[in-house]
Length: 114
Length: 112
Image 1 (cartoon, chains in turn purple, green):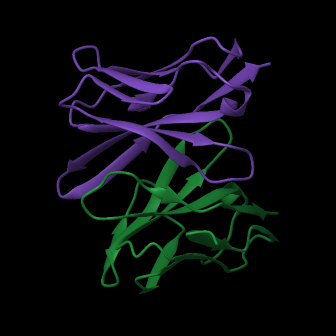
Image 2: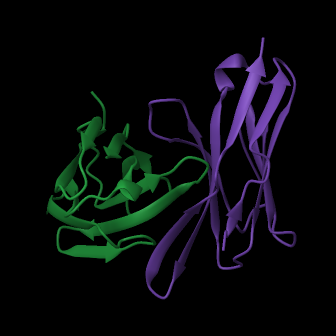
Image 3: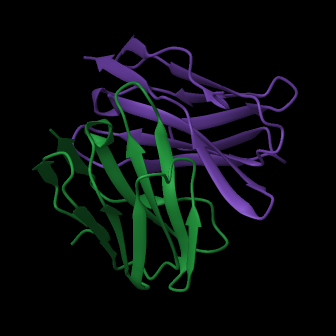
């Protein structure tokens, strides 16, 4: 049972345009959401996050939107740059029964073409 | 220098062998994690530790064990490796009170 879903495996956009990466979740206990970026042969690096009490968080070219009623979040990158080409993971965090839980989606490969 | 280091970076071994993957961190974080990543899948949690005396099972702990030798060191062992443990393994750390985890560069393990 996949609790965090990234339904599109890949996305290709032109440099300068907006990239929109989507993520859906099923567990209403998740209270914090994170996006990670991963380049080949490297570990994931933290990009941006949002608490469930907010609906938007912005950091430079990156903005994350959260729609709790739809259990949906999205990452917007604008303008997209070739260096943004990477695999992006959505992750959701909760504490259940005293145990910490961070659940990752399968990832989505973003390609930004010059 | 990297904050979270993993050794070895690549390892090929045979079925039935005992393997240890090591993780060290200089971030001073109390919390450390081991994940595995398989092609087409996200990262799945194997074990995590909140301090030297605390070890917790994650989603997929069967076939693995861990040791938290010090605040800065967290090792993952495969007592008897099997081919379906072929994967990319990541160590991560986190400071208490924040959600962001910091990942090492990964260890690519192949079990023949």
